[in-house]
Length: 329
Ligand code: HEM
Ligand SMILES: *[C@@H]1O[C@H](CO)[C@@H](O)[C@H](O)[C@H]1NC(C)=O
Ligand SMILES: *[C@@H]1O[C@H](CO)[C@@H](O)[C@H](O)[C@H]1NC(C)=O
Ligand SMILES: *[C@@H]1O[C@H](CO)[C@@H](O)[C@H](O)[C@H]1NC(C)=O
Image 1 (tube, rainbow, N blue to C red):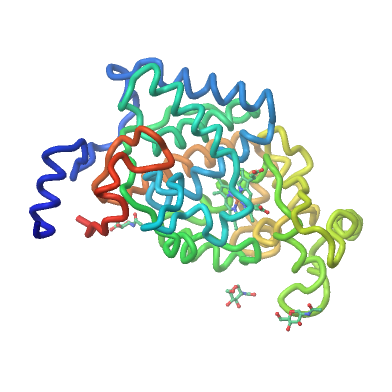
Image 2: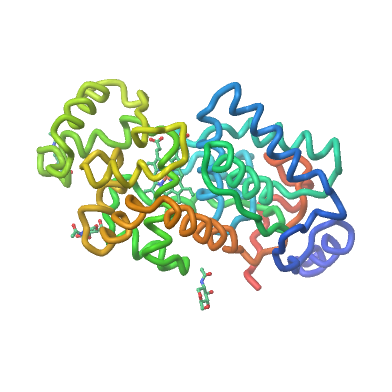
């Protein structure tokens, strides 16, 4: 069959839709009224088993959301290199099994209704709430992608070595402001990172052969002990002083030279972002408000490609469409 006929027949015979409905609050209120309750309940149980799974699941929204289409969740297949092995994701993203558990519970309650892309959006919000942060209503109605792109992920996702200028430019490409950048980085109020992500700044910042001079000396001693040169880079450290609580401690740490990642500390050392670090450090409500605004904007980024409601977040519903390259509307 010529490709256009194939596409047409796929659109007619399956649940693939070419035009996604606009995102809105309460999208599942008729089709799956329990959806938001189920997501929070499963996540709560997962966090009771391992508190860090909240942070790990929340991070998945960021890594999925330069499209917000569940593409991150697809496993590799012989025809398609997925995003799980992309540079910023491999050996780093975790708690995919919590997403699977949420999906299973939703499929029991309302089969074929709730997208994996929406699960990430709900679960990210719930992780913040369950860690003591703000609550907000999420817009839903996303569709799951039919493909994934490791290459796009490698091109887009920022490095922990990045400085504020390059982060500003990156966020700007997605219409996210300087304020959004500083507020969303406050997600590092919870969770952990590997020595792998900081050894360069401890021992060879910008190829200088010396440590990053902006690290507060006592904190640097602590990091040197945690992450000795030539040591195990899979060892993890806390992203801020209160890694289980979603609060504005992260910004206080930055002001004291105690940021964990270079991309964190640079938000204070560079003048373009410093003012927001001060505001959020002084006023937790301002941080919470800006964070919620940023998460909503991040969740609004859409790929504009045809999608479906996956039954299993790790695989597309039909192998026939997997990896098909669709052109953007
Ligand atoms: C501003 C650019 C950002 C950079 C450069 C960055 C980079 C990183 C890195 C390198 C790690 C640790 C990875 C590892 O060592 O394995 C990390 C962890 C984390 N990131 Fe980001 N990130 C950024 C923005 C965000 C955003 C916008 C969010 C969420 C909305 C987020 C949420 C998280 C969370 C919650 C963790 C901890 C995860 C866990 O404990 O498993 N990050 N980030
Ligand atoms: C920030 O990072 C970019 C990209 O790595 C680099 O070109 C630039 O020189 C850096 N800016 C400063 C002031 O260090
Ligand atoms: C950013 O906003 C402009 C103007 O509203 C729009 O044309 C563009 O598609 C947006 N970019 C993204 C990545 O959403
Ligand atoms: C530090 O980084 C520079 C540039 O990346 C590299 O040439 C140099 O070999 C590194 N030094 C050490 C001690 O790793």
